[in-house]
Length: 152
Image (cartoon, rainbow, N blue to C red):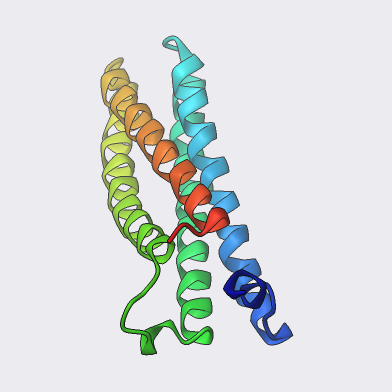
């Protein structure tokens, strides 16, 4: 019965949920593009830079939009008043906050790597950025499962 009630929400909540999902899709697309471009670069400086810039210009704004939408829908649905939050909500919160920290670290490491590309170095730092991006993708896949399946 609760799953049926969860599908019914006021129309005024739709924009907050839409922004959350849109931000999450943009975030995952940016992280996937970063990992793919750096992974396939094979030393090509243009692809290494493209991978990093997709993380900076696409994934970071996607994370911000996802987080704003998440907090907005969280408050609209009244989760702050609930003492025992569901597992899926906890998984989403941990991966959003932890993922934001990993994203920030990968942006810093990748930024240093891109700067060092001018001297013919930095590919190793960008590979580290790719590895962090793959870790983020795995976490986000688990989060999508939790948000869609709502285990608890």
